[in-house]
Length: 250
Ligand code: CA
Image (tube, rainbow, N blue to C red; front, side, top):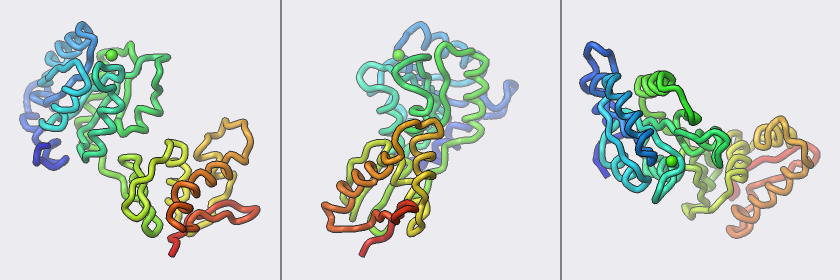
């Protein structure tokens, strides 16, 4: 990995901003897109706007370049040979690479926009997209720079990293599903406080959830089996008739 910090990467990427075309002049962008014609068109268009563009056509090479070189932003397709865009994005974020990433999702595809943002992308565009919109979004991303790393959430030795979507107990990684992570994050945002069941249901399952509200109890049970029982803890507590809380269990 390059020794540049995320901030340095962004700064390096912004060098040479002055110019007749404004702040995109010389701004280096990586485009990871396996459809050759589309990649070429994006490259041509961005160069015409003053960006410095590198094209690559598969996931592993995209990951390697993003790790090694300072880009101001990355345009990342999702369905790629070798390694999909979500895995590329998630890996970069877990390694502390915060280069702004704009994900290209296929409309009505296998992946949706919420997932794109969930894995640490900064923005997304559904294909087919307007080139004008792509340029505007990229400019906004470059201006904003890399996303600051969200703070760790914790209660005692139970730690959740919202940036990498990982969880650990006493330093030991614990594998949680996205829903389990979301539920635990809601509880850890207010350690020691009772969070009403209805609120957890709304925030984790959404306003439109029409199923049984007992799903919250079921998932708290899953969390206990992964985070408490194997470690002899009782950190996930039910407050009968009210809700749930997470405490730093001694
Ligand atoms: Ca593709």
